[in-house]
Image (cartoon, rainbow, N blue to C red):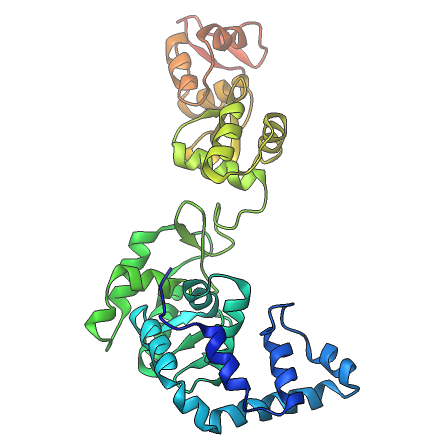
Length: 344
């Protein structure tokens, strides 16, 4: 967390002292500056005063203008300039939640920070849109360059792409044009990536659209997918459950995990007793006999050892289990040369 030398609460308290009583109450209520509760809606304040929400909005806007035109704002310029400089050091344009988290230690302090940015002239905000989250900037040229770069990045990420964070950061930096070299570093680029409302980051630091596998985690299946992907080889469902708890701090009952893996045939394949792999690794769904048939169909007649070897690449079962499936199965015949083939 970054530090600022002033206390936002003290600065905002001095700023609102220039307001008439009702205007001051509206500002305190709208921005949650009292510390007693969070920000109130226009409707809630209007009901308290017996006026319309639109009238409350007018009072709020007028109060902000009074502060901005008051000499007291000029007196507080050192604090506002310090906040401006700190935001500039972090990249000049940042998501609102990032700024509040960087400089606010508690909800009340964050409310005061937000108020200072609203009344402070160095700070400009843009609403959330199809590409970006709500953000604030202190340098319009940098903000435009960052947004242009991120839009270029967005256009190259397909719906199912999952991209390593370091590669994506390099991509962002490579798209930057006409930006001071002091901003062209990976830490700043990572903060800029947080501006995106098109892309998301999963807990393992991978980026993609919400539609990409393993990016937006909704349930145990999504967490299991990431666990298996990170492990890189088949895992028993008990191991998957333990890994979910260890990696994500999310409670995962073993029986529940097993059931969720069974249900998701699009991503997971049972390759042994309680052992699961990802379908994207090339594993096919089905029982051992189905894998035997698939191999015979693709490769033609095979010896017993060839079948055992081929099935062994897709299923973690004992040799005898494979051999049992070869015996007395009307779909498979043993030829005179000792090889097995599909029955005609």
